[in-house]
Figure 1 (cartoon, rainbow, N blue to C red):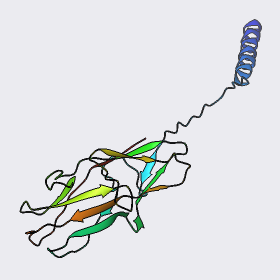
Figure 2: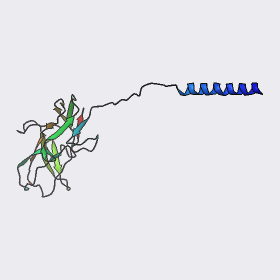
Figure 3: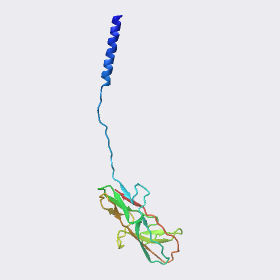
Figure 4: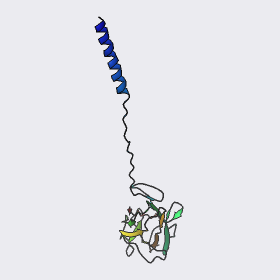
Amino acid sequence: MQSLSSRLGLSLLGLMLASSAHGATTLTGQLSSTLTLTASCQVNGAVGTTGLSFGTLNFGSQTTLFSSANAQVVSGSNNGISILCSPGTTSTLKVRAGLHDTLSAPNTRALADSAGNYVGYDIFTDSGLTTVLPVDGTVPVPVSTGTANVINLYGKAVGKASLPPGTYTDSVAVELTF
């Protein structure tokens, strides 16, 4: 019986030693962390890919006998279109088609009322209104330094005889590519 007790005791002692040796093992390694940043731009303080407001070209209120009205693109309380991109980003602003282009020649674009009357207008890249921006015309944006670039666009609406009173509107598509 003693030999059975001795063997049992030695077995238990062996198990305890094996168990304590196993519990003392330490494993080491690393945890990897990553972050990928892609170039991005904000237009007038907003981020997104569609539905952004590039501003308003508001010719104000005129009489039906007006000859011409000038305006500047305004975004919020600021003149121009504010474009803030990641530093080093090169971008291009493209002014696409409006809803009524070529319907009031010789102007490139037209404002329309609900009855199909048109007021011709053009968009210009200079305050002197000498450089017309054609449909799908591009405006280069300076390489971003991390501060907003302001792009100024101007408009001139031209009156004509027999325009009835009303509200005349247009919507022009704009794209920023970077």
